[in-house]
Length: 116
Figure 1 (cartoon, rainbow, N blue to C red):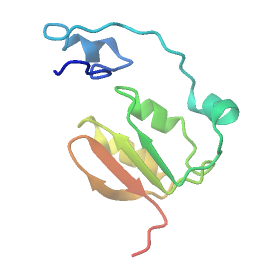
Figure 2: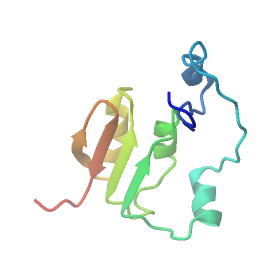
Figure 3: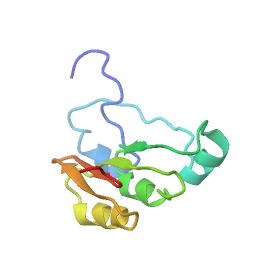
Figure 4: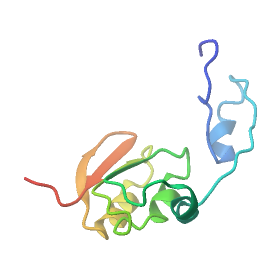
C-alpha cells in the first residue's frame, strides 16, 4: 500500500478486517451509523432516488433489504456482493420488478422499467 492510503481496510464486520491484520497497520474508528429509514426521514435532502449504489463493506445485503425501492422510486440499484449468494440480492430486487442488467465478481446492477 502507498503512503497515505486511507479507508482501504474498511468494514463493519470484524471478520472482514482480521484477514488484513498480519500485513496492514490500521486503527479502529467509531462512527455514527443510521439505519436507512432514519437517514431518509431525518438526514436525506431528497426522499427519492433514481439510482442507489450500495458498498457498505459487509452489510450490503442488510442495507439493501432495509430500503423500500417503491418508496424511494428507485429505477437502478448497484450493490456490492463480493461473490456472496447473488441470488438473494436478485430475489430481493425482483420483488420490485427489477431484473439483472449486469454483474461481475463484485457488483450487481439491477433495474426496472427499462426501455428496450
